[in-house]
Length: 122
Image (cartoon, rainbow, N blue to C red):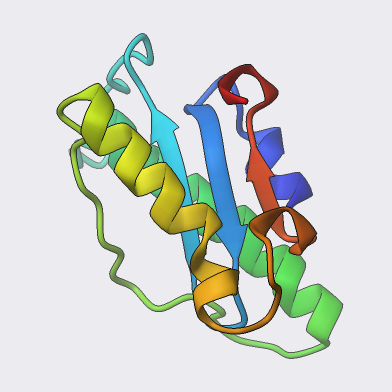
């Protein structure tokens, strides 16, 4: 959770996240995050791909250290989706926070200690 917060505001603006046992949901925006300059090796990254590289690197290392297991922590792929309007934003936010409720871990999303919602949204 600390590593997710640590990348804000340089890489994204954090709205919400939910950590589950085998996946993570993250709601961010990058409206004023500039595209990174091309790397010396010629590879170009978007602001989102750079943020995801940083996020997976930092959180993967922290999780592997915490669990005492070597090797890669995250799968290579991830799923991203562009939120196009306020209604869709609300729907996705509710999906994220209610994930542990749907899984039967808690009765109310506020009871899951691994859920974060930016206080400005509440």
